[in-house]
Amino acid sequence: MNEIVVHEVGLRDGLQMEKQVVPFEQKVTWIKNLIEARVDIIQIGSFVHPDKVPQMADTDKLFAFFREPGNKPSHVTLSGLVLNEKGLERGESCGVDMYCMGVSASETHSRKNTGMSTDEALKRITAMAQTATKSGKKVQVSVQSAFGCGFEGAIPQERVLGIVRNYLESGLKNISLADTAGHAQPYQVKRMFEEILKLDATTDCTCHFHNTYGMGIANCVAAMDVGVRCFESSFAGLGGCPFTKVAAGNVCTEDFVHFLHRMGMRQDIDLDKLVMLAKDVATFFNREMPGLVYKTGPLRTVAANENQKRIH
Image 1 (cartoon, rainbow, N blue to C red):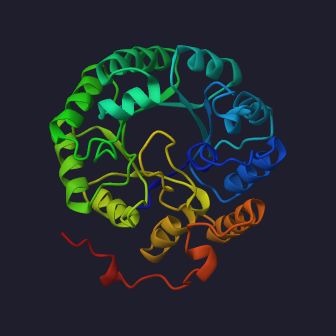
Image 2 (spheres, rainbow, N blue to C red):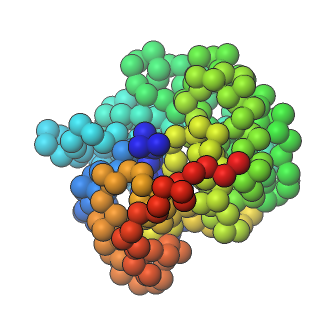
């Protein structure tokens, strides 16, 4: 379980809903804090039109800065979200380590988010992912709204698995399920990932949960119990998709790392630095953040061995 991977998405998912634009220098400071905390993967932006999402206007500049010698240690991977071919070209120019791209299982969310149907988006994203893979880049493909949609309600499991099958048949095995609307519940999470691993036991599964209804970490535990090892989270609990009905933050990074520490896992990640970062974010935006541990303070004891046993 020390192989658990933390993928920090606060600079992208966390900031895309914020009206107050974060300056380049402040983003650099926050990214350096995350690097020092030894988070595994940091998603530092998305390649979208700056007029549509002003918070992401400096994404290319951020990647270029951290590509400079001495600015990024080898232990961290910098990821970026791409939505189309133009975004992929921009990513190639500025040195992205890993591309994240996805398709929504909800037709309504897909059209609001991309202007395309799910099938149209799937063909386009699959081709882009294969192109990036051939160029030697790491690629993660996702199914958005995998556990429900604010507009459509329940999403049939088979619809999600159909997209996953397409990815696997295209040679894409790094697959994330994103709970865009925050509708997931633990039993559903367990069933979904079990079915994916039945399709291909070598699939590298990732999960991305929003804490809209307070189920985030419970869903992480359910995913972990069936073998998911990569978890996306956002510092201070920021986040939310602007194209879903009820936007809410992601699973909070410092809360999730605190949970891992309590379970005796990933002691190498510096929780104190993450708590300090959350406090800095709260000060910057001049409001209380959704995260809990930065307010309560962490528990320093590690759970006893009997509390680390998996409950099935």
